[in-house]
Amino acid sequence: MKRIISVAAFTAIALSILGTNAFGQSRTREDVLNEIASKRAELQVLEDQFLAPAKEDRAAYAEFLRQPDTGLIRLVPRDVYESDVYKKNRKTLTIRGGGAYYSFTHLTHEYGYGNDIGLDHGILSVGFAGADYGILTDLGDVPLEEIVLEHPSVSFIAEYSVPTAEPQARLEYRRFLTGTTIDNALYKSTLPAVPGRTYLLRSIGYDVSDVIVAMRLVRKDDDGSVIIAWKLLKKYPKPQLARGETKP
Image (cartoon, rainbow, N blue to C red; front, side, top):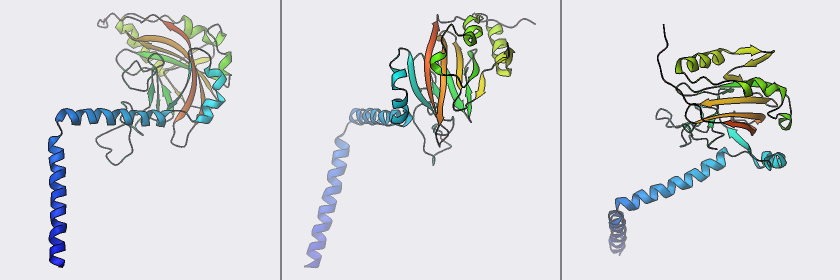
């Protein structure tokens, strides 16, 4: 009797396996590709939720966010959640750049879409590829609402003339990488990310965008990510770059 039951059980398992294999074989590569696309869309929704500021942050800035050309974002430190073949055991995001970058023109964290700001080991930075560069300055503990294009602290960045020759653009890149002081204000392409501070940004991406943005670093989370409230002050025409060699 026991043997009869065992044979029956074995037969049921075998039929189940055969059925599964048959089902798998009946799926076309197109079916599998469609499922991958569906899973990727689901994953993107989850990653958007992960990168979103907390509800409390949005509630605190609800009135500010009703204004045009404003936003509230989270930046996570570079290399913390960025996907890497050498970090198989780490929790990572599939979004390119790992959520450490943001474009105020394209409104995306995806690296490679005219990124205007980045976060790396507690440092804010601008200028990430080619001759692209930018300027940051720390305005101190100043309400974001007070910073408008006509504010005295905006004058240098607003009136700054962007070079169109590549050699000069690269000189300017190095100038702001080192930092320059004008009227007692430091202008650099990298600055410490300090909660409670307001920053001014000019991001220059050749053939992509040229913008001035005021940013308030609202707070820092336990994983090192920061919440930033921002408003676009001005959008310039796309800067064009004439390639050429530096003369000796």
